[in-house]
Length: 234
Image (cartoon, rainbow, N blue to C red):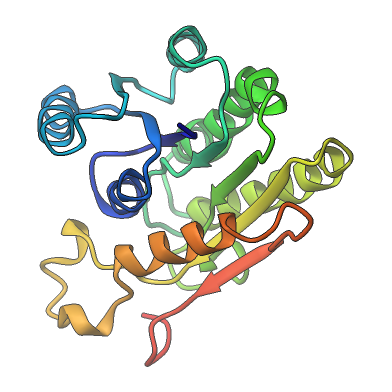
């Protein structure tokens, strides 16, 4: 069976991607920080998808040693990675002149460096696939500045740059790379916004677009994928 690796797999976009690819028959590896959520997802999915291999591992992606351990466990269980989705990220609002010291470094550790390091660790396994694809989940905050974006926006711009350079380097190896730019997507963090769920993108729509992008022929690459709420950004 084909194999997908997803970071930040237990809720939001990551969980929706996991569901979409499990339904499509993929084996799956994933990580998140919350041990209870990892265990809950593992139990639920192993009951529903009992013919597929499911490997979920607690991992704090802000720590390079844990990124490496996660990658090594993935490679030990699966010789080949067909899809890598660098989805994990954290959001801390603020203005560049007012945010506390260390704000940028904290965001960079998860939003950029974890994707950079995990991709490097898993590249040998991706090279072994006949149809390898890397999806880097950025944000519309990585396309334009906005109020209180601060260091978060900087890290998403940086992830976009990483993704574009990765695409350029890997095209000769026939590894596809797509940068995904979601707008405001409904999740538990928006539950107290006072806005209706219908005002947001659904995580399932983003997952469906990623699956459709992967299903294109190996000779086609979607460089960037931008998805915004119908009524505009929030």
